[in-house]
Image 1 (cartoon, rainbow, N blue to C red):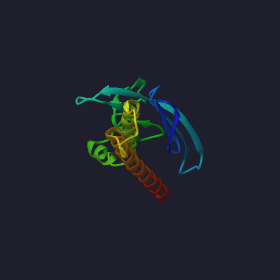
Image 2 (cartoon, protein in one colour):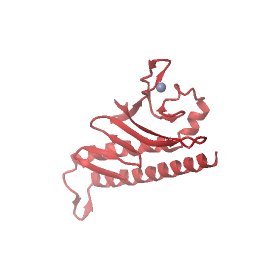
Image 3 (cartoon, rainbow, N blue to C red):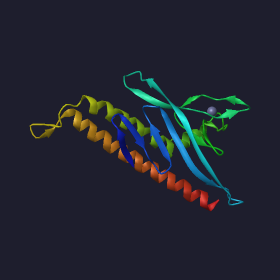
Image 4 (tube, rainbow, N blue to C red):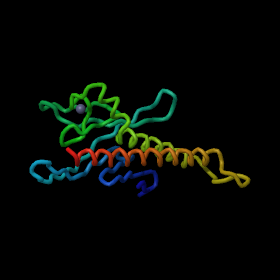
Length: 173
Ligand SMILES: [Zn+2]
């Protein structure tokens, strides 16, 4: 669930993932079970977020791939991370074909990104919104916030569906 910890600092808690806007990272923590041996491994690491200014105003966040490949730090700015091995990284590091990238845009990480985007906008609007209603009606800004909240909720549900779908597929492997 989304929860507010401090003003202007939102954490996105989706079972195992945490996001900090102020310190600009996503925390990945999960337990992975080896299909063959049943051995459990714990993972807990941060992936930095990079903020850029959009052409038509506003900002958007990118992941900065933190994988090391052949001893070299990747550091690529990407919109989607994949779990091609133990860790989440960019498609270049996992050498994924473009077709699989397109497919993955429909999966959970893409939706997670949309949730982040919506909450970033809500954060900005909330700062500017001085009053909640005017003449018994929600103000324009509050209407926009409400719309963004339902967008975030929709994308969050999509993320959950994609995640449980993935788990289901893993079980049958
Ligand atoms: Zn990479």
